[in-house]
Amino acid sequence: MMRTALIVFVPLLLAPQSTTYTPGDFQTANANYKNRNPFYFEGRVDWDLLNITQPANAWEFTQRAIHKQDDLADIPGAIADYSQALSMNSLVNGSCQLITSTNAGFGQNTNPPPCMFTPRLRLANLIRQDQPQNAIGLFQEVLQIDPLRLNVQAQIGQIYTSMGAYPQAIAAYQAELALSPVNKRLSGDQANNAHVHWALAEIYRVTHDASNEGRELTLYLNATRWHSDTYPWRITLAKKRLAQLPAQ
Image: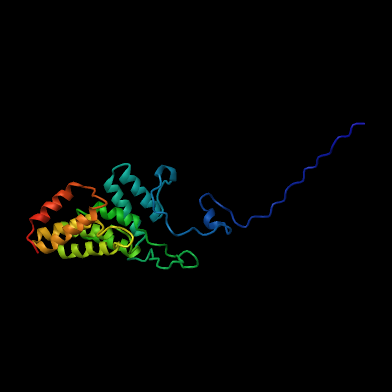
């Protein structure tokens, strides 16, 4: 006789849920979901991939601003979004903090979240011609966030030079050079950062300081000896100007 297997379906009893989760809210409602890492990834993310309808925090406004600036050439829109991002990530109103500990993120209080440098750098470069002082202030905030970040002091020096504030420009350029000193034991270089030495030589030429101009032109040529220059024509011009300076 053929036997028929009896299949019994037992209903799965689920534990009652104490919390109702709604889409987009699971991060805060789910007790098992770890807190978001507050250290922003500040690189560009394709805006279309983010699927964000309306930015809700400093990082999202920054990403939309980058999209407007790089993809749409909507500079006023980008400026508005960078400004909104910084209003939500501000050293002035306390909505962000400077992270100075090497153990940041491991037990350190990260509320408010860390200050971001990307919106400050990008906004400063967009407004540097029309609002030079505000641009300098943004660059200085970047240096508060990351004192060792290269090329920020040099950009401050460029703005001061355009304003004719030569002592401040010289100080900024010298601060840039101090961030990356030459290690002569490891290389044959006698100087580095040709662009900064060229910029300093230009200031001393305009202010008729032949001694310092000659020194900076010499350092410029030393810096380009092994690494040339983005604008190689300046090497020939530097040699010509150096030869025309009075002997020291």
